[in-house]
Length: 269
Image 1 (tube, rainbow, N blue to C red):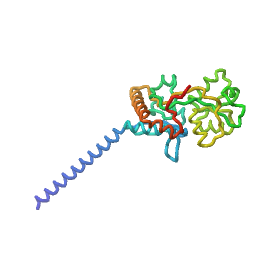
Image 2 (cartoon, one colour):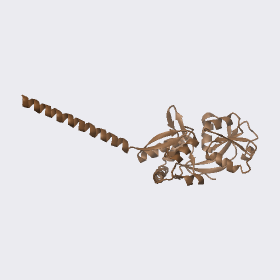
Image 3 (spheres, rainbow, N blue to C red):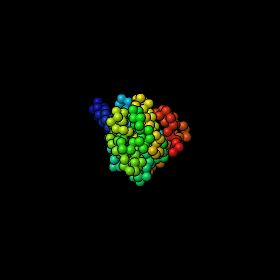
Image 4 (cartoon, one colour):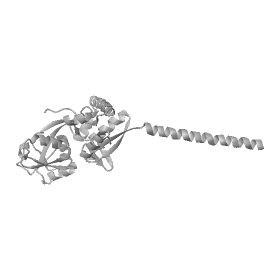
């Protein structure tokens, strides 16, 4: 009996050790799985219809869905970061996020700071005014008047370049909503943004805004990444996915879903 008891105790001890070993192995495997998960931190204002906006608690939109599609194809999980546009670009510059999915225009200045993927859409920079303003029909008609725009946006910079003699007073806002609402309520004489975005906003909410002439300039839009080896790698990976989505027709389909038109091909300038 004594021998039997000793044997049983020994076996029980081995079982406990085995269980502990398995627990450690499982814990180690779980840690490895978390460590190996590829995460991209991507920025969006969350207030940019139809590029990136909230439906309830969910972030949706053309740029958001495109980023999710590309990241998924590349095996990344996206961690979204939302703040105002100037804040997003500051976080990208400081390395706190990996890219921005918010209709970022490719400019000469930005190309010196960031690695860009190939363009995935093309926008005309458009001025609008309240429909009540019958005397404002061309961009020149806004000289001597006040135009709103988003702080840090390339739309504002393009308006500054257009206004060579500084005859337009440009009022900047942290968010698109503020800039747009002041134009809707005639607190400013005009508002500058991208033409496809404005068309979508006007249609969605039946806004009392009208286009003021043709776009003052056209821009290529893409995802910016840091000027690092990792940033260059991500830009190349995103570029290949964008080209594949163009070829398959998925990019055009996504554009038509949010804009009712194909903004993924370059228009006549």
